[in-house]
Image (tube, rainbow, N blue to C red; front, side, top):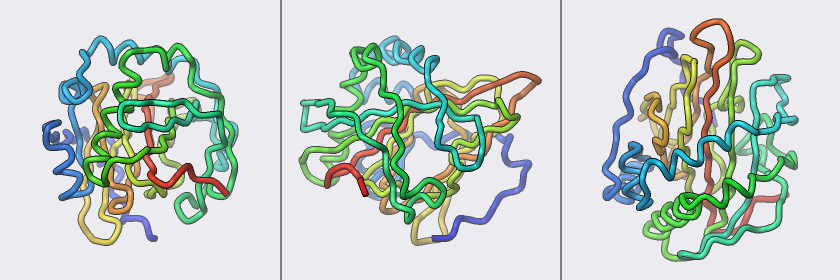
Length: 256
């Protein structure tokens, strides 16, 4: 699958506001368009928690080990990973496993078993954590029918240690799952990091910048491809962009 045409470099620093969808219309938007963005207040409404509960998750991004698998030679990504099965309201942590994607979906890192340090128990003990997985799995079931969902959770910090950080070094891509949820956790001292979503089998696309913490982008992975543009520091020194990526798959975890 070819990547969408590149945009002028000047667009990288333009903060285009996301086209927010009301949380009550999330399933409808995913069904009609294949993607939707929910603002922070809407995420709180969707999960049934207050902003303080989400903010309590944020400090857990300050202790992420370096990603040792970057094939572009960069040092800009830190991450943790864990797997769960969500069956209605029951959230079960499953034994740690390698993150694996076929080359078809990740030309840069596909075909490689990547073992990352697990998510910290102190993060998983936060009240908002299970609500997040339960609520988003519930949206998936509204669209595909109730079933267990196999969820991979990825904590990412992309920084500007090398002067530039790449949130999606593999380029515009799909993940080989049913649904993808991307939550912005924080954005500190950077420019760039524009989100781009395109039809997988069509010409339509959109771009915007997630700038408010706990903004949610949810994607129907079969229908759209997505990427985020590189980040650079606003001033001398380092900045970073923290995200939580959750993938939902109905037919088990991906593996070789």
